[in-house]
Amino acid sequence: MNKVIIFSAPSGSGKTTLVKHCLEHFPELEFSISCTTRKPRGTEKDGVDYYFITPEEFRQKIWKAAFVEFEEVYEDKYYGTLESEVNRIWNEGKTVIFDVDVKGGISLKKYFGDKALSIFIMPPSIRELERRLIARGTDDEETIQTRVEKAEQELTFQNEFDKIVVNENLDDAKSEISNLVREFINS
Image (cartoon, rainbow, N blue to C red; front, side, top):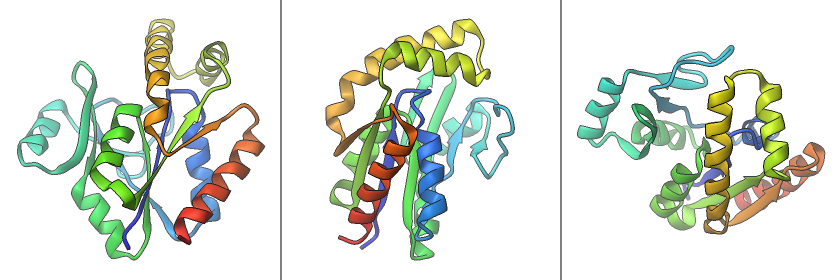
């Protein structure tokens, strides 16, 4: 059966680090590259981390029903999962792994149902989340405040996911995630 694993979390919770851990330890997984209209951060590359496109290009893809899910997270800041990307990975005989925002994670779980394992990565606290966002050094103070406010709201959706993993200690979180992924892939 074709399967998907969905990682969602408020920004700064460590989900991308945990997804990379899974990709390094489970060769049967392949990362689903999302589309976005935001600009690349740091060393992000088009076609590797995201498909970076314009808001107009994104809206054209919406009109053509090219997405399994999409969200306008902030005004003209879209994120979405292309159906063609999921099919490409399944055609290679692999399990799709997603790194998506909370609304996207809920949408993907509804879309894929029993084919999906959805995991919510929980920060130890909002204060720790804010500290991590500041330490990341990729956003200005206003953006960080917006992300913290959004995170408080996103935490209210944690029970919509199959599993919740608190990322207080990274090694513990990696171990817990590995066990969940292994169990799901082998079921």
